[in-house]
Length: 97
Image (cartoon, rainbow, N blue to C red; front, side):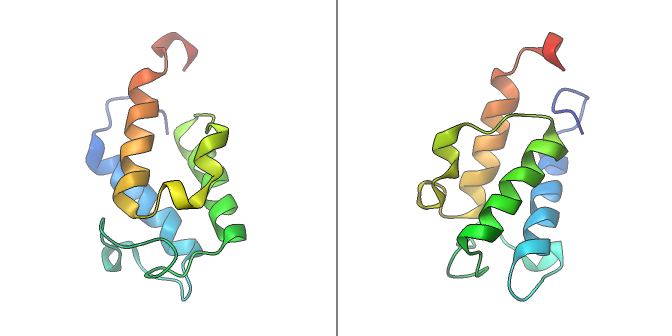
């Protein structure tokens, strides 16, 4: 999914929730995950799961995640991840897509 292909933030959120549902422990359906959920305490995402999640974001949204994003504590909840992906989408030149 390209971030500049006309998809709105609802699609970005849905994709992120789907990715998180696959790595949460126990696995959850996207509707069971809230934007205020904490990655570690609510979704039980560990460091390995977070790396899998980051790789999923890169593939799904065709973006390269910056190294500072790999610090899980910097993005403690789902909303902070959504905000990061949207910010990356808006800063990426369209001709690179």
